Image 1: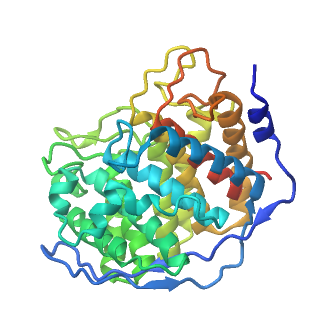
Image 2: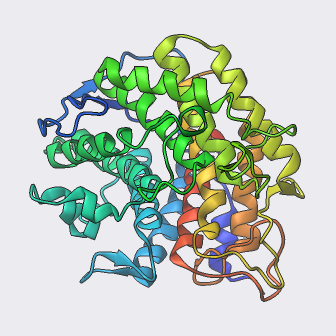
Length: 405
């Protein structure tokens, strides 16, 4: 039986909205491939207003806040500053989601979380050894950059000092830029062990480079973004369905045919969106939508995202995989922010709405934990975890901005 609270959550109030905040841009002094970088704080630049803007759906944001409250009360350890059984990259996404929500809702409900988190404590400590902190994970490092930027955006919007977060992001970015080499023609290694080149690490490098340029105007970032897309687009990792598989076989430098996860298809889109704005090349938006459209066509059941490991009776998704679908929705939001087009938004609006309905209708339990499976009602196999709840939170926030209201 559904709880009355869940039924209430599913009722959308028509016409309620809050004004979206002007996005902030941050500048960086970092230089590609240099062993040392300046730790000068990134200055915050306000972008020029662009013609198409969407209001946030207030009722949906209220639902997101309820889910976020449950995420924090059930899973965030205020002593350690970590989420239960979390890893760096999933904790980064959860923090990014909270700050994405606060910026959308113009709220301060979770304003103390960043500085209290282990990630925030590292950023606030000028002596943090980022190479040691990252543990050799080049993909995790870039999720960290995105979280640091989002926290900085929130702090800057509140008139607070964000320099520790922006300078930390610049330091981490330079570490990752140094992981590019010409094996298989180019690309950033998945880890400092140099055993694998994969899609997500390079999609993230496209995104952090293009977004870093938009924040700073630093030409090195744009050069890196152009270099990354030139390589990634020819790497063979995008298959004949338009989906990016997991990575490359280093013996052949060919697509390894491993799973095409949902998040791979949207992170590349948000990166291409940022690069399209940076260069004025709107054909990159069309490239972005190849993988988004393939996701909708190939990675769904009943119009709802599904990972290959999702099963309402016996899901086998691990902690990493439980957060992928929410990352897809979040990066579609970021892509649409950059594309800034009513027609492109309308193409995905109903789909984002379907994810919202599935999250609350199928995945949410009576306590507002969000289970890992969205596409069907739970049959005892859905998994509750901070990653699954953060995933659901991201989906709700994306719908608040670009779904039906």
